[in-house]
Image 1 (cartoon, rainbow, N blue to C red):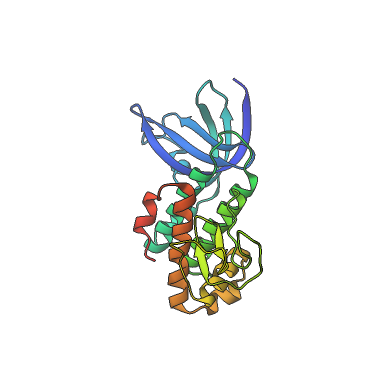
Image 2 (cartoon, helix red, strand yellow):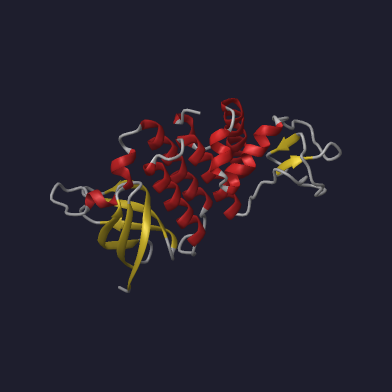
Length: 242
């Protein structure tokens, strides 16, 4: 069987047979990959712990007809050991893993930007410089943008008129002017829309100085925007303290 090597983040695992697991991976060069890790559930397995969710690993895989097989695994960054100690960071990171799997829909198609974005967000979670909800909201906006669902927080998404505008619609893709507004639009505070733009751009100085009420409103809009474009909600988002 042909072999190939890649680095990956483990997104999800589930049992296969008595001792094996199917590992869902987001790889740097091959996009979404599902592979079998044989014998990793045995207590004698030397590298089963390297294939747990959140782990950043260097892998060697053998190509298979339906599923590839993992033949080697070396840990690059053991994010799970740090995230497992903090409930808020753990649950926010779980949302990121589920989002990555949902947005990268084509298996074995390169998704380098999504991979780098996820690794950077997990590293930020572990570093603890920013609040978990800030990292999560920023990651969700950026990953949606990379997937082709970039929201607009300044220009009207229908006519293109520069704002600021008062109305926000997830279905329309962002803010709407008075002329283009549709029924059911949200009317967030102007500071909330500025905060959303800062989260998308990575303007952390502005994000850290934001009013907590605006941060809470922004998180709600991010969740609504994500849910609309994914067409169904994320199960892990229910456990995030927002």
